Amino acid sequence: MTLDTEVQSLRQVPMFKDIDPARLKLLAFTSERVTFAPGQRFFSQGDLSDAAYVILEGRAHVMLEAPTGVIKVAELGRNDLVGEMGILSETPRSATVLADTDIIALRIDKRVFLELLGQFPQMSIAVMRELAKRLERTNAQLAGRAS
Image (cartoon, rainbow, N blue to C red; front, top):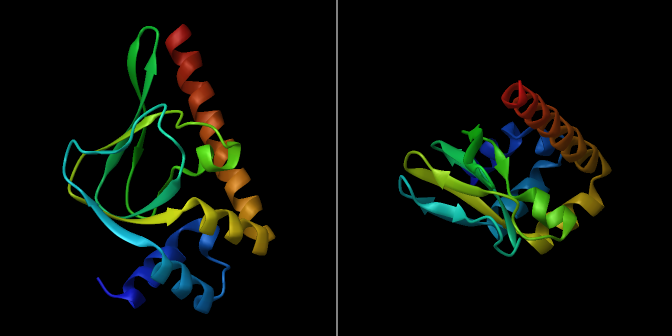
């Protein structure tokens, strides 16, 4: 995968779509391309929140350790961003993310991610919208389990 391909992939992520292509190229260049095998963890619940990931290829799922056991709370795929919640809240990881398939992802360092949010207010709004959607989905799942 080339730098230009990575930039095109980043452009597909809703919160990056309005960012200048030169900045996206810099983001792709400063991000680390990482791979995960099926069953491999991106990170575990309770880990230090040091980076966010954009999935370029493959699928993963988000697992939450609850008192009643492990709950699968979300599925992730191409162009999904994961790991930003801990960065924003400056708290440990709230869930575990596991690869379902072989994955290629970009690892965006915490410092770089926060810098982007500071430079692009529209990205901050997009992140807030995405987090609100996730909260709504989680609330709906929890309400369904309670009945």
